[in-house]
Amino acid sequence: QVQLVESGGGLVQAGGSLRLSCAASGRTFSSTTMGWFRQAPGKEREFVAAITRSGITTPYAHSVKGRFTISRDNNKNTVYLQMNSLKPEDTAVYYCAAQGTTGWGSWGQGTQVTVSS
Image (cartoon, rainbow, N blue to C red):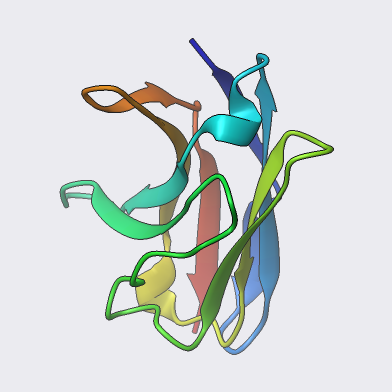
């Protein structure tokens, strides 16, 4: 199983940018599809973006398309989420996840992103 640790969250004004990082442990990172999810207060966790082991990205969530970019560095066992043009509605806890054989099997502890208006 992959252990995941997110970082890079914080408080930012609307229109600003943040880059989230997710450091993974384990020898299987380079062969694992990775994803970012988020959960806002009172809402269900939602998919944001995913990237395959070879760097191909799946369609982004409509709400972040054109503003967020997922990437990975297999040499550093790290996946990133670059978030630009942030909006107050992007406020959420952001989670990194690793895809297993039966779905998203490993999750990080989450990092808080707060966007002020």
